[in-house]
Each structure stands twice: as C-alpha cells, then as structure tokens.
Length: 109
Image (cartoon, rainbow, N blue to C red; front, side):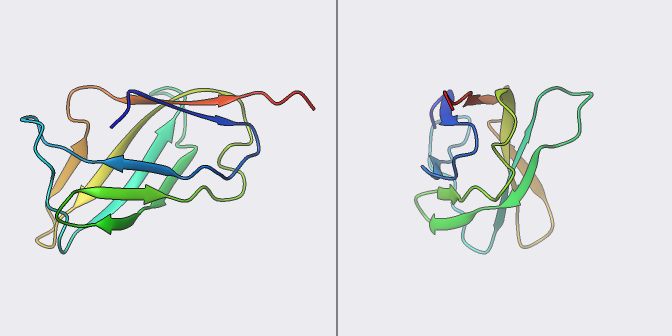
C-alpha cells in the first residue's frame, strides 16, 4: 500500500486500490471479511469517509474504494486506514502502525 494517495478535489476517479498486508508484509486473507475505508483530517474531526470497500482479490488482500459524491469535496491532507471485520466479529486496522495519507488537491477551476 502506498504511503500517500492523491486525487483532485471533486474527482471520483481514480479509485483507491490497495494491497492490505500484515506486520510481516504478507497479504491479509480477506475471505469472509468486510473492509471499510475511514478517512479524517484529524483526531478531533468527524470522519469525512467511512465507506465499504470492494474486495477485489480476497486471498491477495486487494481492496478498492470507489469514491462517493462529496468524499473529495474539501481539499487537504487526510489520515486514512482500512478497517477489516472478520466473520467472527474481530477487527483489524491497516496499517496497524500509523496511517496513510489521502491528499485531496485543489482544482484550478
């Protein structure tokens, strides 16, 4: 997974695609799981995004988030992570050591 993902303000493509890996850099098996992208500007801010991801390749840990209307409406840098929910109800946040950055860049128009 990249440390930074950039998209222009108001855009809904490209989709955010990521390979979710554990602390040993192995693909996380997502069979039977659900995954959500959570994104916020700061800890004291409400989540700008908390939406379901499509699991593209369960055994390879590949997920994709398709931006919804309004997700990229406000420019700035956002902390982001994926929340995995396993079939037994347990949860895992990825990355588990920090966050990655979604950079929403201002448009020229």
